[in-house]
Length: 388
Ligand SMILES: Nc1nc2c(ncn2[C@@H]2O[C@H](COP(=O)(O)OP(=O)(O)OP(=O)(O)O)[C@@H](O)[C@H]2O)c(=O)[nH]1
Ligand SMILES: [Mg+2]
Image (cartoon, rainbow, N blue to C red; front, top):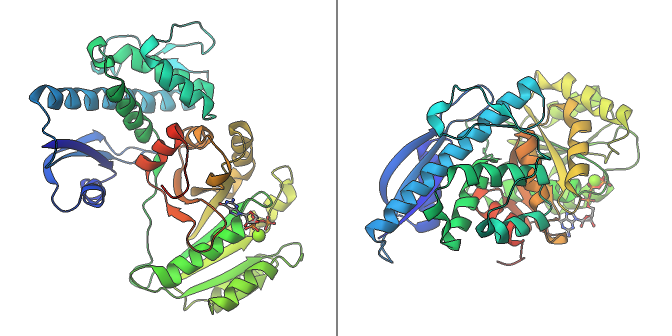
C-alpha cells in the first residue's frame, strides 16, 4: 500500500482530487485540518489515501507522516509571516527556533540580506527554483524556514526533499476550483490585462469550454468592451460567428449595462476588454467605472490575465496597477513560451490571489487548463512541457 496526500479547502474537495488522481480505489486513511478558515484565508484540509501498489514500509509511512507535519508547520509559519508583514510592512519576519507551539511568541525581524548557509542537500532544488524566475526573497524564506524545521535525518533522501518542497510550495498558493453556473445563477467573467497577453484568445477558449465541452452545454454570451472605439471586437466576432454565440459591443458603463441586460438569458457571460498599458491609469479607470456601475446587478468576476513569459517584477507591477479593479483571480497565459514558471509562483504567493485558468498555447479551445496546485508546482520546478 502506498500513501499519498491531497489538499483542498474542504475534505470533499481534497477527496475529489484524490479520486481524480488515483481512481475510486483510493482508501481514505485520515483527514487533517491544516489551517482554520480565517479572515483572508481559506481553510485547508489534507487527506491521506492509501492505494494498492508498492508496499510502504512502516518506516516510510512514518516518514511520510513526519514530512507532512513539517510541511504544515512551515506553511502555518508562512501564513503568520504574511499576516505580520501586512501589519508591520517591515521586511521579512522569521520565528525563533523552537517549533509551532510558540505560535504566540512575537516573531523576530529577519533581514533578507543577512548571510546564511544553504545546506548542501538543498542546493539542487535551490538552483532549479532560482532558475525558474522565483523571487529570491521567497526562495530564501522557504529554504531558511525549512532548514530550521526539518530534522537532519529527513534531508538524506533527495526524493523526499523534492516531495517536501513541492508539497510546501503547493500549500503556499491558492487555486480556485472552477465554479460552474448553477440553478439559474449567472456567471460573469471579465478579462483584463496589458496588450497582447492573450485575453481574446482565452475568451474564445472559455466560450467553447462553457458552451460545448462541459458535461452540460451552457448558454454563453459575449461582450466586448471597446472603450476607445478601436474595433476591438473584430477578432472575437469571428469566433462568435463560428460558435453561434451572441456578441454585444459596449463603449462605456451604461452600454455595458444594456449589453448585460440583452444577454440576461445566458448562463455565462464573458467580457473581453481592450489591452491597457499598466502605465495608462485613465484607461484602467474607465474599466473600473464599468465594473463599479454594473457590479451591484451582476456578479462580475474580474480576472487579470498575465503572460508567464514576463519576469516576476513586471508581473507584480502590472498587478499593482490593475488592482484597483478588485481582481478576483489571476489567469496565466503563454506557459509554452517560457522555460521557468517561478515568476507565477511568486506572483500567486505575493498577491494571495487564487489562480483560475492557465493558457498553454494558441490553439482554441484545447490549450486551456483549469489550474491545479499540484501540477502547477511540478511545472514551476521542472518546467512546462507541452503534451505531458
Ligand atoms: N504561444 C502562445 N500564444 C498565445 C497564447 N495565448 C494567446 N496567444 C497569442 O498571443 C497573441 C495575442 O493574443 P490575443 O488573444 O489577441 O491577446 P489580447 O490580450 O486579446 O490582445 P489585445 O486585445 O490586443 O490587448 C495571438 O497571436 C495569440 O494567438 C498562449 O497561451 N501561448
Ligand atoms: Mg483582445
